[in-house]
Image 1 (spheres, rainbow, N blue to C red):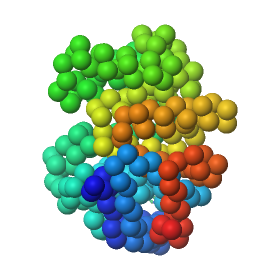
Image 2 (cartoon, rainbow, N blue to C red):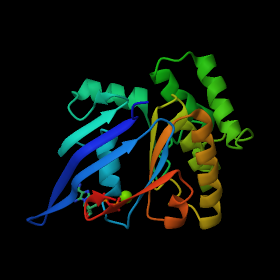
Image 3 (spheres, rainbow, N blue to C red):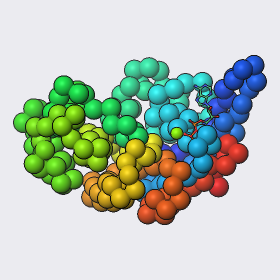
Image 4 (cartoon, rainbow, N blue to C red):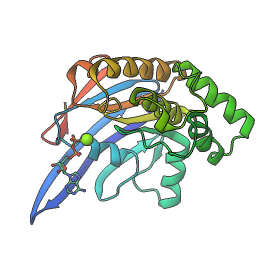
Length: 223
Ligand code: ADP
Ligand code: MG
């Protein structure tokens, strides 16, 4: 089957205090359907820069990014928005949930934006949250949830629209080690159950080993 993600020759530089730093120096990466890939590298190695490019959140790079068969790097604004909405899900280190909405509403909203009926979206949100052990937290607001629970809601939200590819940037980086292990295991189980692929940035070798494959970002290239 064709790749969910095919990145080739990706380059990204930043100017910092008059100097130019080449953060990505020709990155090639393929992720197959349902494959969970760890993007491992130390802090500052360019993991977030790579995920932002693949997530079509930032321009300014060279190279090709094919998402679900479509050349996304050269799509116009409307095309990028559509690819993000239809094919991608995002999880960040900090949950970025809407503070005035309940857990279930935070998972329903992206589905409504995607065109789902409210009752269908609500059932799916409840099912995803229940699968993450949050069946008793559906009407809680983010501020009423623990850090681990907030990240679980963010995971449910990322999967709400059945994305072909989930991009996760240090998804458990804000949690203590024990909670991080549990939330990561639940994240991986749910992503596998849903059949999505995932690209998960982490600086934690131990967590990376729990994924299907590990790629290492070093000197701006993957190995
Ligand atoms: P990681 O996620 O692996 O910690 P980042 O992708 O955040 O690494 O950063 C990689 C390098 O790119 C760092 O040296 C960082 O300072 C630099 N960088 C990232 N974003 C910007 C930006 N918007 N402007 C200038 N430099 C940046
Ligand atoms: Mg980062």
